[in-house]
Image (cartoon, helix red, strand yellow):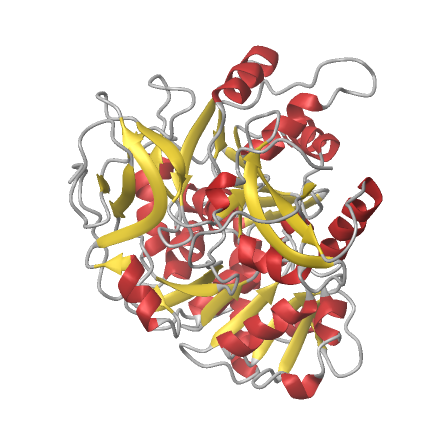
Length: 524
């Protein structure tokens, strides 16, 4: 075990009391907890809204351990809803805002949420689902203007008391779920416990980043991601710092405007966004000012060393690359200020443990590629209704990450790919199977294999090798196939290139040999 002081929590523990309530008693009521555009929310106001939200949910009949689904952009109401749910002993289920209606149907039914809190801009995606196909949903609370038959979040807050005692929960009670994609493309719910956020905060945010109440946190990764949830919500609240929220998409100009206006000290992003920032020039020809940022952090996929060097050269800021997962909640392995090794994921975080093993779980020699397994007390308890997957992924104290790594003589971990065919694109897991299923619905497509290839910046992007039913491929057909996918799947799952082939390479048993397709460079 990589030694660190033990984290001691009482058996009776409620995460909302820890991250929200205690700031009043510690004299931070007037400090700003959240900034979102021109809006400021103090710690005193945050505590009141969390209490109102919790009381409002209780008035709707929500009980301990029941799930409340959150489909919200990065706005203060996310914080109210997340911690208000946890405070009454219910289970918060934040979900991806970039999905399609059929995905939300699955998530609502899988979680069995009777209450969902939904942003008004996202509401049409849920309204498109026939109500009789939603087996458990009873009440929709709308952040914004509520249609007839639904309840406005503002009205729920105004009609509820701002005094609320936390539910008597254990440190090992379920607090929230985060959905993680699987190799079939069907998301799985990682059940996280009341103590998990404290562990991630203590082990990574405090020990590695040295966070304090003077820090201002800005995360490009959204709050529904495990990565963004820490960066943008519970890390700042753990120390009385300030979270800077940006509800809209992280386009480069928007990101730079937030940095220059709100002056974050910690900036969290993903490699693909760092690449976009480097490619973006200010409209007036000046250079963007990132002087407030003391640390930039990258996760979600491996950060190419070239991106690290270009970013440091242009902006004077070093990027701390790290690796985490939805199952582990946040970082497990990280570069450390003053000990950076560009291109690597860093070293195991003190208090956690990691090893690289072969397919029989035997340690591999130093420098040899193997399967990364980690041990961390922030790891989810299990996958909801996925017993076999739980047994295969959570082996005793160890989490099988599904990542291939090797470790050098100095203890740095180097990413070598995925154990299966999954890959992260812009920090989001993408399943080739899901894209293939959509493409094979197109009348022109006979067979397809989706693989990942590095782009000019060294970032892995999905593309499709397509065998047509008739005729030859063309640029026009490639564009048509890309649009076909984008109409049915989130935009980050689109194939970035289409290569037309006469046939797919296969084994004697008929299985597609994907590895033979990864080295290609053709296509539209």
